[in-house]
Length: 98
Image (cartoon, rainbow, N blue to C red; front, side, top):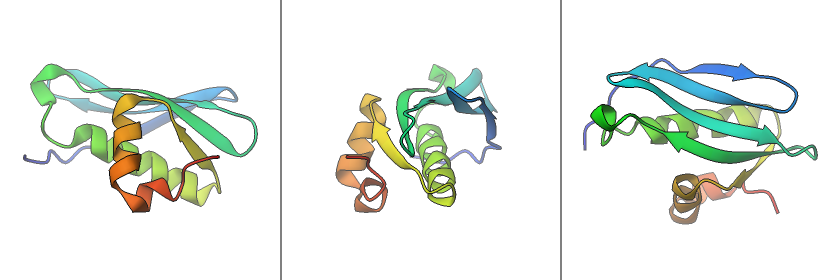
């Protein structure tokens, strides 16, 4: 599996936000909702078919986790991809909300 270096943007408001990157085939994104108790719910990731297999979703998740760490937030991994990552990587699972 190769990795595509990407520049990640972040759009947000009081109810939630998204991390995104322009990649071949369109926009890749990770969306989340604010839970209100110092936690966010990651509910969706998407990578265009032309850019899959290049660790783009992983980079979006790692970026979101790094921001959550800085902001002292926990994460509820509702997206199946993110849930799988949290199960197999202890460093990410440490940020799981109860």
